[in-house]
Length: 375
Ligand SMILES: [Zn+2]
Image (cartoon, rainbow, N blue to C red):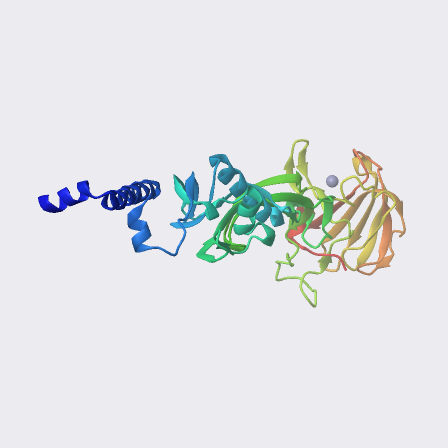
C-alpha cells in the first residue's frame, strides 16, 4: 500500500484520477443526503407515499366511515341525517329520535382521501333516502361499510274515541212496571282524546302503550225513569167469580200511583190515588169500571166530591171519587172497562186524580192487592 501511495503522489496523471474520485464522492454524498428514506426506496420502490393528516374519524359500529377536520361537523351532519329520516313522522309528535348504533369520533391521523365535506358525509350516511327504514352506510371510498344506521323514534299519537252515553234507569215506586218508560234526560255522547306512545325502529312499530286520556266532550247520561210497582198482582181471594184471575182491573191507565192505600200524613187513606204522570194533568181523562156491576151512587159527597159507587155481584163495591163528570146513572148496569166518568178535582184534593177504593162488606182493602192492570 505505501508503495502505491508513493506512486500516486509522484505521477500527475495519477493525481487527476484522484481528483475525479474525490468529485464522485462529493456527488455521492450529496445524493445520499437528499434521499429522505433509503429503506422505503428499497422495500417499495414503485408506490407513492399515502399522504395523511390529523382529523376526526367517524366510526359506526367500529367501522371508519370518513374523517373531518372539524369535530362539530360530524355531530351536525348526524343530526341533519336524523332529522331527514324522521320527517315521515310529521303526523306524530316526535318525543325522541336517535341512532341506536355505537357511534364514536376518534382523533387521529387519517388518509387525505378519508376527509369529506359535510354534504358528502350526509350522503354517505344516507340522507337522500329520507326514509325511516334501514339505511346502509357507505364509507369515504364509496364502499359499503357493512353497517346500517338504525333509527329509533318515539312518538306520541292521539286518537279520538266516542263515549256512548250510559243509560241510567231510575226506579219509580209510584209508577207501574207496565207503564211506558219516561225519558228524564236525553243524554249525549262524549268524546275523549287518547294519547299513545309508540316506538318505531327502522320504521317498524315495536311497542305502543296507552299514556293518557282527555275528555273533550263530557258524556251525559240518558236517564230513564221506569216503574217498579208490581203489576203482576192478581186477585188473591178464592171466592171471586172471575173467569181468569181477579175480577177487578185498574180503572185508569195513568201509570202512576200518587198515593197508596194505608197510613199517610193526613191519616188513613182508604184507597189509591191514580194520576196520569208527573207534570201531566189527567183532568178530564176518562176512567172505567173496574168490574161489572150496578151503579148505586153517582153524586157529590163531602170530601169525595163527585163520586161513583158500583156494587158487584158478590156484594163488593168499588168507588171512584173527585170526578169532574159522571157518565152513568144510579141503577145502571155497567160492564168492566166501560167508561163511567172523567177525572177531576171535586171534593178535597190538591190536584186532579182518581181516588179508587175496593170494599168488601163495607171494609176497605188495598186495591193493589186485588186489581189486574187495565183492561
Ligand atoms: Zn185518595
